[in-house]
Length: 415
Ligand SMILES: *Cc1c(COP(=O)(O)O)cnc(C)c1O
Picture 1 (tube, protein in one colour):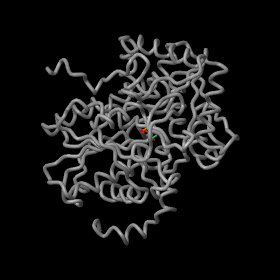
Picture 2: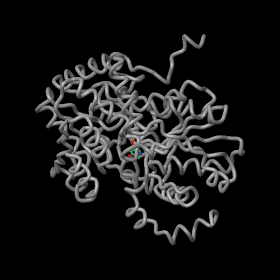
Picture 3: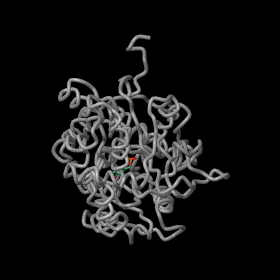
Picture 4: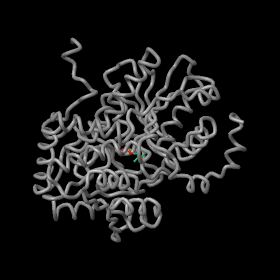
């Protein structure tokens, strides 16, 4: 087959029902399906509109601070004594993570569709803060649904959203956490879908969100490929990212999926054990099911209901995963592995100590896998890690759960 005839995985489109292979779709009651169709139509129009692309690009540059650099972590690489480690610095974006990339796209779409308000759920508050930021930027109202338990746990992010002008709605039903917040936000959305846009926080949910959020995040992969080639004259041997819903991962992967020689690895949260409820390693332990309006690998009980999930990184604890990832898993283009809480914590300190970069606990999972495999690889090998966010938000939690003294005693390698 000639190169032109081959389907590009970098820009793969779902079929007209929103499926990547057998995953995705819009499994919804008719009233919601109709709303999703309208969003799909508007997005398909807007994504070809020069004015929209120009505005988004301008904001990426002047507001977010794109392009984010690629940094060669030389001290970390030499301490590991093997492959060279490079970081795509999404932690340097305004608001400190990759989520602003799709939030900007979503609020611009909401504006163009004539919406007055964006709404979303948030767990730890990261998506809520990014969306509240983007909403303030373009002058949209913003309601963020958050479980009462999370509101108490994540006080700094709640205050941040309030300062930015968002309304934080505390959800008191059920377990008062993320799943209940999703349910409450969807109900609110159904009450007023005409003036509101539900801005989903990852490459999950019904079509068109997995495609649309992927498109907005793909700037990371396009930049990374170009920057890496320009700096090194070659592509990386491996590209590695953490996978919660999968948005930062698909963003960087989509720059390299067509490059057959580049090995691509997604890292899921292995949590504290392999027992159900102790991890969120969806691809490793899940099977096909339905959640939040789409089909994907799912951690589920015998009835098909989502199982409780856990990770030290609250941005990773989701029982499903983006449909395109499920497809890439099945065709074996991307390998999915896991890293435990403990491995992520070690990686968190390693990068801080050796490079002066404090990574988000989510991103630390991707780093942990690189740290695991680098020593056995030769120094010519190049690993590119998506550093999806910064770790300031995780400081208190880390110090409490893995005290510095313990790290310093155990990690003699780096003293
Ligand atoms: C939310 C978050 C993630 C997980 O979300 P994905 O959609 O899987 O990327 C990863 N890293 C950081 C820093 C986050 O805030």
